Image 1 (cartoon, rainbow, N blue to C red):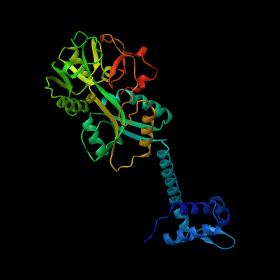
Image 2 (cartoon, one colour):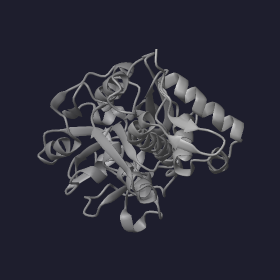
Image 3 (cartoon, helix red, strand yellow):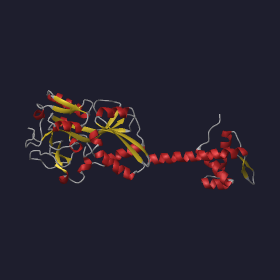
Image 4 (spheres, rainbow, N blue to C red):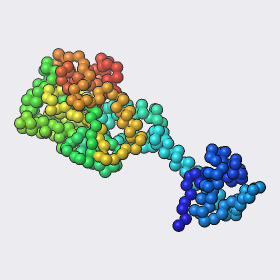
Length: 353
């Protein structure tokens, strides 16, 4: 059976064609003359044809060697392109990264990380799929994306989750609602009697909410379900009910005439992690992008998720929001409260969940 030539043999053949002298060809390749002779002899044996006529005075291509020369040149080019592509992928010079992310992630800090990453790596394409938590798991397990940014909805040995950030659920209500009191936070018992606007059952927010309410033994009065947080906020504005959403919803939707307060309950804290398929090695580009994600925020989660930047205590009633909002936190609680952009510490916008 004829064996295909390897890259070293192809390079040896082409070098000898250029110089027609074993000594000079060996010098170009930085190998000894006997090594080059062995490579040429082995190549001829593998192909079953004589490529060069040689004696003590000269080296010449045979007719078979001249016929095979264009093929060897093409093979060398293809091999060099493979090596170049592999190098580009390894060192994040070109390629595509596919990421599935929660809508609250995809619309807040993720775009900022992408812009920064692509500025340093202009040959990289990043394809983001903004989907609910259940869909993220499916996409990761099917290898339709490199990794996901979401929550672990259930125990699943097919995925592994690297803790990344904590997120918090808040109650959103109209400015004239009875929940708009001087208290900076609300208890579950405060909003439980009111009609509720929730995300649908396949979302990570809904899974966390129902689990928490079941532990509290509360009955739910669900007035409306929606796929999108902006839709839920529109329902709240119309007076349909109180929405339970992540704090990031304040940046994503139209908050005109609305207020929100964090729910004072440890069960209403959502862990957001980097989700990978178990036993699957990520392409180097994806690893580089994950490193960029971890570098871009000081809100990385530790084992207890108890490190979140604190903002000033709010002692006044929540007011209708006219300016864009950013997430702050209430001292002593892992929940978010509203603060205007003008008063926000520099860099807080890039650390929204």
